[in-house]
Length: 202
Length: 202
DNA sequence: AGTAAATTTTGACATAAATCAAAATCTACT
DNA sequence: AGTAGATTTTGATTTATGTCAAAATTTACT
Image 1 (cartoon, each protein chain N blue to C red):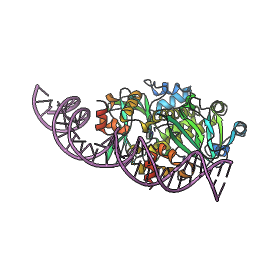
Image 2: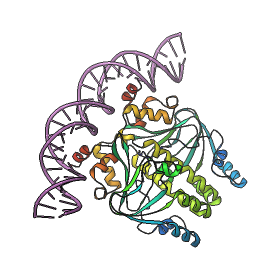
Image 3: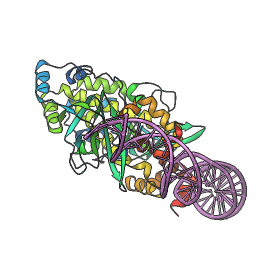
Image 4: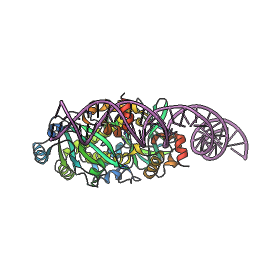
């Protein structure tokens, strides 16, 4: 659902990005000094308070974000209700996939749920980097493949789980979810009502 | 779903692959004569009867398939019930994403729902190709990005749709779905019961 | 064409979870 | 610390959809 912007960056295989973006990329490929320098010069490093907005509906999502610290939530409005798409804890990446990749207006909002530190580059910057440093193509491929695999793994059979099982699956995927998002956000992300979620955790 | 196998190859942006694999790749990048020759020499072209199996649970999914003609279904068993993950019509690609990318045993089965023609290469063949012909990395990246965007687009707000709305969304994504899959398959793919689906379409 | 098997529809009933509403907690700011 | 606002819990009721069962229809094979 997942299923989807999945933004469903459910989890990564490698999941260690407490380091800087450069080191993160180097987990996948080796970087030339020149590529490293160019990327470093382009990176936007932002520290944001709780509730600060990274992108809003109707606006094309220009950036691919890496959450270094804190947590980010994607959400949209459906019949006037705020529906959380996914919560991204530290060490994950986030964007409005469709909007970002097709560079068309987004349907969802991206904002921090707690004080956070995110680094990012824009879509055109990445396109430029792919052209200038073709070795980055592999990084780009591996990154999206990981997201794909994670979504695939998380949502298999999801529909037929009870509310309780859905919650347990999430806890397993994001153990600290209750520290970084409130009940209402978690409930809509799971596709259940807040009251049901409250009862489910007894 | 999530989600995720999404195998949710919901649809592609470009969606024209009636042509051969080579032409398909050339929609994304230009291929050197050597790369083209190598790929052609590796491609496995299979014509299969209805219900023939491409991969089974417990076995690592070795191949990335392109459906040239017919339709392919991915499914798994949950509490003893056959749950369709997704149906892939002609001109789409299919694999068990997690299994294929991580090269670990799959949880799901891949089989044709009607007489079909699929072409494929193995995971190690692709890795070899990426190394020998780095220009293919871009193709690999774009391909997965498309899947990602499609999933993102399809599943947004899916949980909160009624059974009827879910069915309408699917019809919109795969107009010929009733020609290539039966009610039971479609219902479990949507996460609703067969009886409800039967009523929904009146 | 005729029969068996598979698929789809229809009916009656059960139930998990949604909704509506209000009370209880928790959080943050003066 | 005390108060207002936000968040979570609890209660009562409704409802969409699931489940079980059987009939009707379609499909496929001899």
